[in-house]
Image (spheres, rainbow, N blue to C red):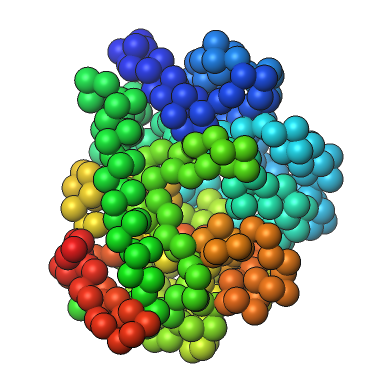
Length: 413
């Protein structure tokens, strides 16, 4: 069995996620969102969490087949009314200081052919219901970590030309490579990696760029203004109690927020976007004064349209992220159809809500103050990839100096 082959390294991977990713503390509750197919790995996470002193491990299970059945047969009103008890439960755990691990492993075509209005309704109702809970994670009040394991359906999408077992094995191998599990000491390897990211972050924060200019041969020609007081982050961060955690494993990005009214031009995607069980691909977005005023898509047009129409903030950017074209994930030449991986193989933006932690004093500001500072707000936050082998990014400082940040898709610094 595939799982038997990777038994020892899976155990080390689970330890890495709990110890470095979420950095569980003694007496802290842990909530895990996971596919039922990953039960064996979830038990490893729980074992390591308890061994490190976790007070409780609670698991919210999900199942792709049941989710598909729900969309095929349940009436619209089900998707328009997200269960309050579920949202209340997450918020209750957040108030108790819980850490949150989310396993991202969905079949990218899970909802292909489903009525897009049902998907849009569910995305909107869940975002509204979970708004208070998201404040705990998006403001880094609580430690959180998004990671992944293979599922059969997802593995077959990534490796369609081999058997199901071989596809799962190949996806495990790709995940282990992306998360540095083949290093002699993965924990030490992550410490060194996070240190390298920190050097990039420090440089960008020292320069405090006013604008970024994006250009690529695919047609991307975009100017992104950054708000005064913006903060670049990357690698890991600290929660409200000062505990260091890594929100994404793998991670290769450094990121900040754009000024919500300061984005102009056009940008083209360079990798497929898996959104809500549907793929959106070969699309472009045209911005004026920060807002999407026109868009095109060869695949997933209606899904993209519903995403942009979720609310006013969904038409604006909430994140700017820099990832070199020669990152390990990019060099694997694998399209994962999973944003956790594909966004760490490519420079990307996010439509929707910005992280208040990317602005000096942001977490303490109210909604009106954040808006005045240029921080976007929305019910959604969706990353899409724009990096390419010839992408150029030039930064302009507040005194007019221009510095080449990216050249031919990679760091020029």
